[in-house]
Image (cartoon, rainbow, N blue to C red; front, side, top):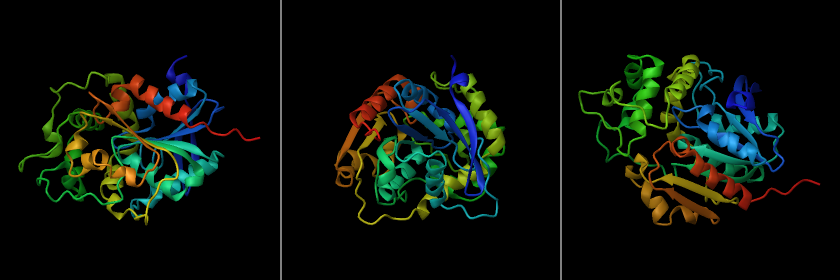
Length: 318
């Protein structure tokens, strides 16, 4: 049975929007909710969804509001970081999931961490890829002017950059750039998408078929909302006072992930800072892993994920 037959799709009415959710598995052992990053969608978790379903879990992967097959919020509506946390709570309630494991990647890691801190009674454990937890707001003041995040924080600039090309080319370029171990930084006379062109091959683990799926889904959503969430909204993140995780936390990092070169990121992991907030913390490294490690090395990530799930069995209700 191929993936298209195993994974079911539906839309849930959540807080005034219809949010797309992909699901598979019966869930005898519990539920795993996968939270994607940018420019990702539910499909980013295809390998992990099938693996956890085969291991006895229910896999649930939503498209965040404004992404993929989920509805767009009204353009005039202010974009707030709390929207994604409230949507996640709404999804769990709509699917009658009392508690779940959360698996987050890229910006999806941040709501996974924060949801576990705010709603520990609804979370069995958290596994995040590529982004460690820190209660401190990252400062990029030391980065060059052409640093991709600085460029994308500037209203209208990324929209103009992306708008020069079709959706497929934009997704292709982002996957090429962000699978590198180097931080994307443009020169003064460049835009970020100028850093790669069609002569640059796709990563070997990302097929033309995969690219076509991403492109077809972003044809619906476009990039207007994804550029606002996360890039222009995470700085509005509500600080949780004295954060302390009450659930197990597992961080998986690809050692070739460009985020290691962002200010402060490596020290959070290697200097024990994250352990101050997560008493039950495990960290694993995948030597050749990039920022898209779950697609690049799915078997390895699946092995780590299922090991984490089985190390923390969910009590079966009487």
